[in-house]
Every structure is written in C-alpha cells, then in structure tokens.
Image (cartoon, rainbow, N blue to C red; front, side):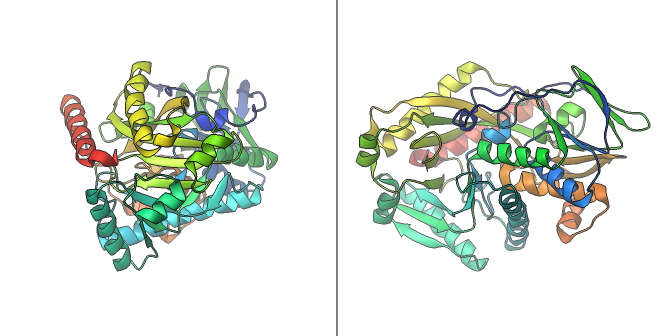
Length: 443
C-alpha cells in the first residue's frame, strides 16, 4: 500500500525547543531485517517498543518516525496524562457511570506504564510527575459544570476537592477563576522531555530508532516490508502507532475525525514578572468547559513560562496553513490577557498546532488489521494516557498475551462511520463553533 499522506505539523514544537539540541538523527539507510517494526515514535510507539523489549528480549525491534522524536504530535500536546473521564464532546467530560469506571481504569493503566518507563529510565520530575490537575471555572456556568462533574466523581467514588476563588488566586496568581475542581490522579509531563528520555532509554536497551524516516510504502509479501526514502525494513510483525494517519495507510477510511488544536507559549518571565504574577511556580488547569482554555505554568528547563491552549478545527486533510496559526493567535492573546493582566508586556515565543484523532463513538482502534499488522491508533484527544495504553495493548496482542484491558479493547465497536465528506466537514465545523461559543468566557 502506498502511504497517501505524510505528517505535516504547523509551527514549532515548543516543548522540544526548550531542550538542549538532540544528537543528530540517524535516518534509516539500506535494507534491514527485524523481528518487530513499529511505525511512529510517539506515546503509543514508544510504549509498544518498551513492552516488546521486556517481553521479547533478544528480538530485534525497529522504530521508524517521519520526524524527530518530540517534534511530532507527542511533543505538541499540553502535557496532561488524565486518568478520569475526559470526553471532549460532553458538557463536563463525563458519561455513563459504568463506561467511565472502565475508562478511568484503562487510563490509569496507561499512566502506570508511563510511570514505569520514567522510573526505569531515570526521568526527572519535570519530565513526569503524578501531581494532579485542576478544572478551572471562570464563570458561573463553568462553576456549574465543575459541580456537576464533582457529583459524578462522588458517584464514581473518586477523590476530588473544590477550590474557591481565593484558593485559585493563591495557586495561579490570577483573579480570573471563580472556582476549581482538583483531582489527584493526573500526571503532568514535559512532553518532549518525556518522549526523548524514553527513546534514549530504549536505544540503550537495543531498540533501534530511526528518525526522519517516513514510511512511504507498506507491503506484505512473506513478511511486511516498509519502505522509506533511503531504505527498507522487513519484519513479520508491524505495529502502526500513527494515530489519525491510520487513514494514510489505507485503514478505517471514513471513520476517523481529524482535528487540530492550538497552543502558544510565552517567553521566559523575568524575576520581576514572576513576582508580579505571584502564585505557585508550577500548576496545570484544564477548562471546566471542554471547549475552554487550558493553561499551564512551568518552571525548569527553559525558565518560568505560561502555555495557553484553545481552539479546535476539523481538518480531514490533516494539514493546516500558517494563516490558521495567525488566526488562533488572537484568541490565545485574548485568553492570556484576560487571565494575566499583570503580564501585559509578556509576548509569546512559540505558537503551534497539534493533530488529534477522534471517533464519533469515542473508541480506539486497537487490534490486528491484517495478518501480522497491528494498530494502536485513534486516541480521542488523550494521546498521552490512551496512546501509552494502546501501544502496550497492541504489543501484548502481537505477543499473544491476554488481559482484561485487551479484551475490552478487542470487544469495542469499530469507529462509527462519518457522514459523506462535505456533510462531515460542514457539520463538524458548525458543532465546534457552537461549542466554543457556548464556552463563552471559559474560552
């Protein structure tokens, strides 16, 4: 099969730009034979490689990625590994009790796998820490969302704490938030630091990772043969860890929704600006309304900075132009100004977009697509936790292992078919615009 699209990510991957320059890439050159091939070096691909390295010691494992590790979607997210239900299409993230219990259990399996990798490879607390997060409410409507979600969490017997405006001000330094809902099970990561650290650990464990090696063709003869611009990998078993680019490999046509979300990161704050802001040095806020603005404050490599993330666009081509970044930049600047008027002179160092893959019925694509070809795709907006889970489960399936989580993944329905392209584009765009308008000042 010819691969019909290659990844194109708008703007710089800011998290990666904060880190020291990586060693030069080692693109695949020549023809090699492996026991396992993994396509994609994001959360899913690295988790699959880690699981295989433990369960199949001595096997030759090859990972290919189209770009540098940390420059693709894995290095472009907001860095929340969320354990609790997080349905972006809902009013307050929640769904049915039974389904949400299972989703929470599975998300925690993904987070536990990430924690194990962080510990094994000696990653810092900045790269991965179980710190919890806050749903921040800027309006009375947002506060109602938080209260509704808090009741749902009580019904799930999940720990949580409501924070008032004064407590939110003490944490963030901002008067913007009326209330907050703290939950302790979320892991916070520096996404590029995490994936680069894991990839470095895997390399020391005899996993070969070839960056800047996009797969342009994938054929099955006796074994699978993946072709890149300068080489080929032949392997009996392949794991596709490419999220929405599963469509580019010819699978699940008309069933996956391709969405971009966008972020901006400030320059490093001066000591005087940090003092004017006040609050805590590190925190993370997701919006009470799923279409609102996510905010993080970080302190470490790269200095004291604030990240703003909002806006979603439906883009079936999996590409957006530079003009889109300029358009959403105005919304980011408005959101930043509303929250941090004391930082009026602080500009943005980086602006970028990142790809999400969703299904209408909120299911992943984990399974054997063809003989020896396995999928760990469609993370439904939680690529950090769900991607890590999917990679581990796909590896387990390929190894012949079983578990309750894998059984659930294999029993899931296929992604619901989308309406014809013109209708899906119009419909999705209208729904996103309506949801953002409904979010109001939460945006």
